[in-house]
Amino acid sequence: MTEHHCDDFEGVKASLPDDEMLYDLAELYKIFGDTTRIKLLYILFEGEMCVQHLAELLGVSQSAVSHQLRILKSSRLVRYRREGKTIYYSLADDHVRSIIECGVEHINE
Amino acid sequence: MTEHHCDDFEGVKASLPDDEMLYDLAELYKIFGDTTRIKLLYILFEGEMCVQHLAELLGVSQSAVSHQLRILKSSRLVRYRREGKTIYYSLADDHVRSIIECGVEHINE
DNA sequence: TCAACATATGAACAGTTATTCATATGTTTG
DNA sequence: CAAACATATGAATAACTGTTCATATGTTGA
Image (cartoon, rainbow over all chains, first blue to last red):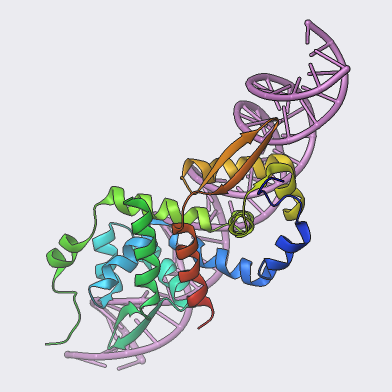
């Protein structure tokens, strides 16, 4: 009797989270899987910043940043506040930090 | 004096990790950003399993699983051992678990 | 060594994604 | 209200990604 689990389909299958949850999880990580968005999040670690300046720091167009911010916003990873014409973006909560830290740990091993 | 950081380009820029690290990080998360791979990892939480059975559990072709396993392997997220004709895959370490747990936390908030 | 089996790999294709360009929305000031 | 500015959005495009099919590699036992 080996220790592999090929015998126990039903057991393993039952232990899996439901498909919707797995889908959501993948969707979440997809968001972190892009250099522009990772950079955005890292910049926002330091505090809020307006769109224009985010674009300059990243070296991409205002439009590109805005599109990416929309994705981050819709996943509730960032939030924003308006001040006159300017909109300042910031991190929504600390999950972002902890998620990224987990990744960094793996890379630095 | 507001609290935003638009003034402090250089400061924020200096605080950013180097591009290579940010790239690697994005590459890592990209791997988690796919339902098939997330499922694979979840299955392997329960123990090692051979390719054929992984394919059956996932409902995709043997080839597809093999391609995905190659990606997971090259990122050192899984490892394998051969036993005759069969190859058993398993998680490489516990980082996978902690990374995924961070994601789950965000989803369940 | 040959047949049967398990896994890996390459090419092709369909679907997705990130960017840019052009333009729209919304805000402030004269 | 009009002009100037900041951001958002839609369409188009180029690049990337995951799957399948066909086939190659590698292992075992007769």
